[in-house]
Image (cartoon, rainbow, N blue to C red; front, side, top):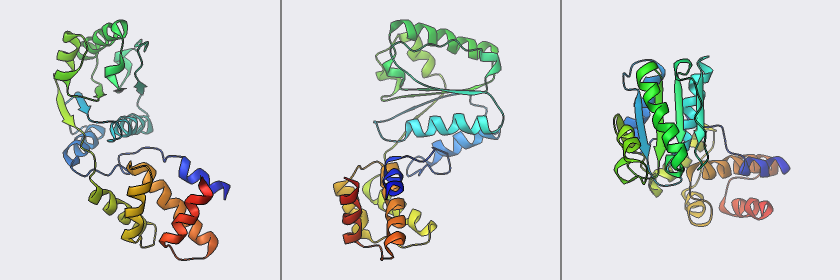
Length: 226
């Protein structure tokens, strides 16, 4: 039972393969192309509401470069974030939550951006909650962030989340009733990674209990997990 509870609380490592694209197929394909040198675009800015999957994408891309034995960094920005990297040695820089930066950090990022453009050939991938034009940052930094490709990361709608949960269940070898998907969307965290973790835990719980996957079994699992 302890492991089942950990399954609900522990997110899976983000990868491009376990990112459900929805209306973000072009963005996902662009990022995949950067990993196989089919994209000449070095500067990409992505934006969207909290929970839409921005951090997932940035972490997944950085890790994918590392898996290819290439140097990459992922930074989740805070007001006192530091940017003291050697641009020439990096192949990927993933800078998350750029809108959080304070004045001093914005200057450092601006200088780092110029260094990357002049001296490196790395991918510079940045995220924010709004489009570049709406960022409350230094204007010269905003201009740099808008130089390359800009994508909005669209959240999945409820029907896409239902299909994602059902397709995930099928890939695991079982059918997930629509009533369970609807219940999770109404009563649990609505972001897809959290929903998938509950589906996985429900699968293991049903095997442990040797009972079919039903709404009463889901309610029992969630009650135990409280």
